[in-house]
Length: 287
Image: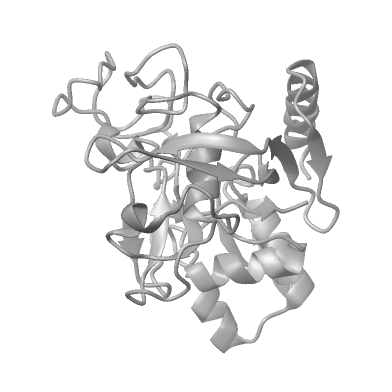
């Protein structure tokens, strides 16, 4: 881990401890995970019905998996070419590459979220790390940070600006009030794609970072368009259908998408083999 990344990690741990969050460190990959407490939350909204559901407690990673972490995973498991190509697309828009008989993050983007990872590549990382992908319900409850009936992962306002997230701003939506438009100006000078270092923006109510924008995040669930209407308030298993349409779910929006997609209830579906420079993931640990 680079010196500046170590310093940022130390600051992050101190900030989380000061907030009183219950924090654990996952040994295999060094992920920091925060407790999302047991309880009810309201999910859905705007374009779908709003429903209450109660989930057991779990831990969610504070931020998406980084390029450095994914390179560490590849070095540990040494996948063959077929598996590697199924998991991640190592092209010019991915900042993990072959190096010295292994893999490394490069281009000063070790602390940026890994992109060009398929659902299979995210799932494989989780299995190696002793973690798993979050369900849609786990992801949305965590993103809301304890807030109710809000579009975004913060309490104070129901609007969004570039001060709060790395996303593509436009005047198309009334709740996008950013004084700067288009891609985030702070990251345009960096190499394309315009991701930002994880943890660059203020946390939500649970202390989680990057729950809106930066990269789309794979969830475990198979996509089902009417999934919200199928959830039962009393269910204990938060996971949706395993296969459904054959597609999987992505949440959170990204640096290249508008404010509408950054809403906590927005759902995107994609084939599990899909890779893109806007797509990454984070993991969950169930107690």
